[in-house]
Length: 318
Image (cartoon, rainbow, N blue to C red; front, side, top):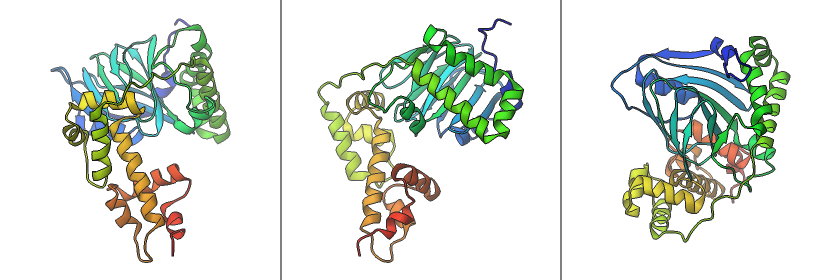
């Protein structure tokens, strides 16, 4: 086998699931990535599977759907997503570009950006989930952007690819990292640093004059943040199609409308906790601010503000 062939054979021992059921496939992938839509784009249906390993702040996986598939992630939530193809090809629309992805070209999506992919029937993806804080620290902050398309066979990426190939191709090394937290930490730090160093810095696209419909969307979100909004609701209020709103909102604000909604809800929740009365309940505040899964709210809140909602509640004005 050529030394440049990427064959993550060690991942095959970490099969998360195999299924012929689309709903089960979506649920199992959502459990280690995030909720998303899966829509078959062909007539045939094969067996889906996912191999997945978590190493510290990294998640490494291989996914095949066994048929052509449309994958729609409204907004990448709290992590960077890098994807390329082990076989087949894909076309991915993200915030500022449409990227053709194959075994030599990857796409990298930042938190808050959409991931809208059409995968060929023979496509097997390699996906890398990278903790946002770890990656931004390695990039010395989020001020500098990067192009979403990455040529993974380019000279700057060779060191990173060599390390990734070594880790995912060696069962002994991967098993050791899984069993030893110190080894796992060193491996994930090395991969993150190598990737951060390899990516050329690029200015973020300049925002043009903010369209009126983007401002209408923001006003609608602020007025209805506590309600169970979907992108369709926001786009109708703004008077444009969901795709147009998502693309132009991202160009103007750097995040998707749904990420803006999440940030607004989180801000409202913190303000409510800090000004709550003596008998206020965290669950009631979370629900009033549009968070309908209390456990997920608590985790997201702690990550956002560095403390649990109960700690904020104790700070409230008397």
